[in-house]
Image 1: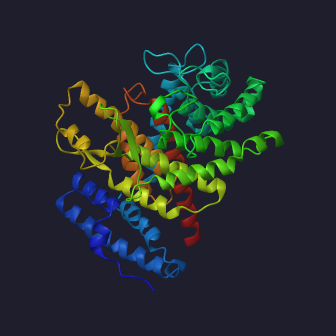
Image 2: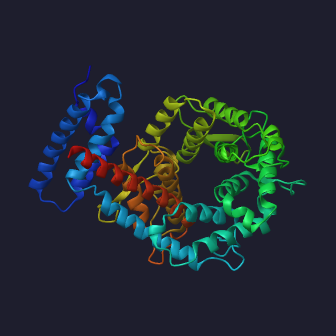
Image 3: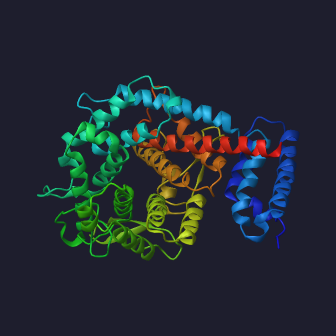
Length: 456
């Protein structure tokens, strides 16, 4: 039995709100805009009726099928053109990759401005270059860059590998986990660059497992003597560590001895348990920080919730468990935190995310900061990086319509500098995120071609 399409419920959807605001902000005439409103509901009812007449009618998948309505209406109103979106995104990625080529360090790594090469930047470049399609037409030797980056990680094991003795202050969980994922993804090249690096990866995975807190989660540092905060398990650290261990467990080339020493499925399963247990009543995750008086405080966080979603998506697939309800709840909350971004003239620049959720003091504080101040630039940098994390998280979910993701990608692309860099933001990560989004758009175009063929 199907339900009637309720206009008020449709209008309350974030993707539909975005669609109508795009119509209002467009250069169309008033008559054309009004006609778009009529056309939208005509398309919505038609698609709803078509889906209701298929197998969806008996599965209760109306919520999933409704995600097609806004994107289909936007496409018919020429506000969502996957071919044009693909062209714009690829152009941005090419510019970013050219910038990455220009700032490649002589030692083989990558780093941020006025800083030496870092694990975080170098590993993200490896992942970006491996994900990028050949059709991007590289103006440099991609394989050479990947091999040099692997060589840099090999030469700088002290910055990420968890080996004994662990350096004073511990090893950063984020760097260790990201290096593991990059090297496993590039595994066919690793052995050509270094004969011992595979063994270092195995030992570092073992170090991650042994470096867990008693609750099955991770602190931001492995092996550090942190006194009172040693048991402070972090959502982000737990996410990256569990994803790295899942990647290692899926590899399929682990020796019997290593597989016995590292029970990857059990470890990831315990991490998922911790994440579920530490979600709030609303089904989201909080960021922890030390208050000036030394107390551990928490605040709802878009980035930590995205971290948790990524861990659940990867971990559940790896161990074979179902947390779809928890993922759906968290995704809905993240989408509800999306903010409309306007320029000085009040025109729409795009849609993005701020680390502090809407309605909090932290989010409201940004509105009171002058745009020409250093503090405002700090807020903008967080917005860019937070929007990038949201994009690379939501792009993994087919239930999130591509026009919604394009609103985020378009804002990121619009803030890219002429030289291909994102000033004061994580260009390395944004590039990798846009490449992932580009792949989703190509998949959408392929589906459209197949759909047209089936109609003939």
